[in-house]
Length: 63
Image (cartoon, rainbow, N blue to C red; front, side, top):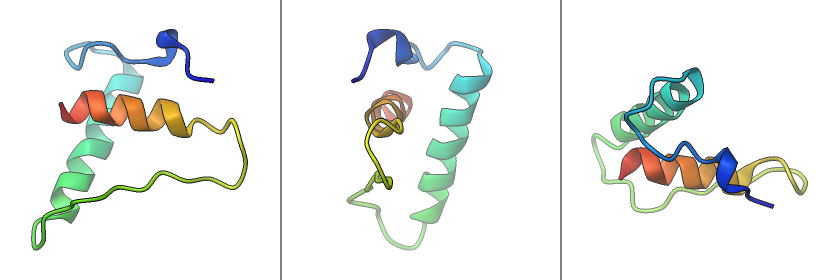
């Protein structure tokens, strides 16, 4: 279950985990240079591997 403490809250924070999400965001932006990305799928093999946390933090980073 997603806990609010798992969210990066502010994209201006300077923590290694925030920088990792910014890197992921930038890589996704560059992967869509020739064609706009409209859908991003987050998946894993089993439950509780951090899909919701990753998706939420990526959304904060993009916003």
